[in-house]
Length: 358
Image 1 (cartoon, rainbow, N blue to C red):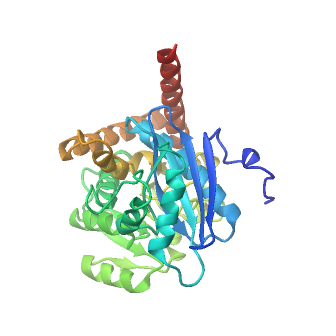
Image 2: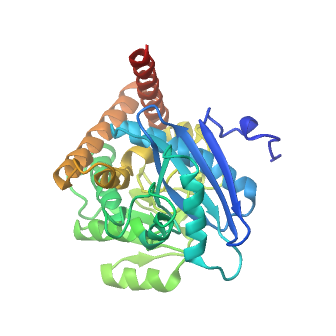
């Protein structure tokens, strides 16, 4: 794949409002901050730190993730826009506190148009470091803290719904679920919910020791990280990185539904149609995994309390039900239906904003 000469020519560029490339040689910071939309309010989305194979991969990731956050936030009916940031993890030893202070300065340079939180590879403590150089970060230890438990709760509710819609199951008792990324922030909480509900779990993760410990605790089976695609199960729950439903993996899947916490699970939009051809139900990721950003709203605006968060999670479940029912009734991929709804809501918000300014 050739590298686009400009970010404007990148296939994942979707009229993003801002894309900032930030470096700080003293700390080793190499970060990309993408603001996709602010029509509903400041762009909010986590910061991911990862050892990317190339800077081009980091650009693709941040563009797709930030667009996904716009869709996620509008589908959850939140008064915020969508953005995301990625940090290319420095090689060797580095001063983590100094790195995230430098990241905070990059966030601050956007003047409040982007608010960050933690994502893969980043902790609430890292956000506390960033807070020393900007006020535009959330997910702090003394705030709403780690949003992962709420994200996991929302995904669990979504899996319950998928089991009902795709499997005809009124409970998860005995339902076979294969979980990828089981020991991650969200994955581990999700596995506990699923085990408590009586699901038959098969788990995998890149962290072998943590995986075996979690499996022993929950009475689950484990497989190698690449073998998860071959597991015969009812539901596949991806909870690691994105693009895992692709041309190489799709024909290996032996499941009836996909519902998990990972962002950008489909390598391309066309994968949604391929899943439909194979009679595999799909829960659009930015709908099912919006619990974390809902939780973080309590830190952005104190009016949003735990009762409000729980109500929003139930609202997500209802939205997912609408998408799955429409997909079934119209014979169209669920991901395309969700995209259409999200884009229309963003356009409606933009039109309303322009009308109010006149």
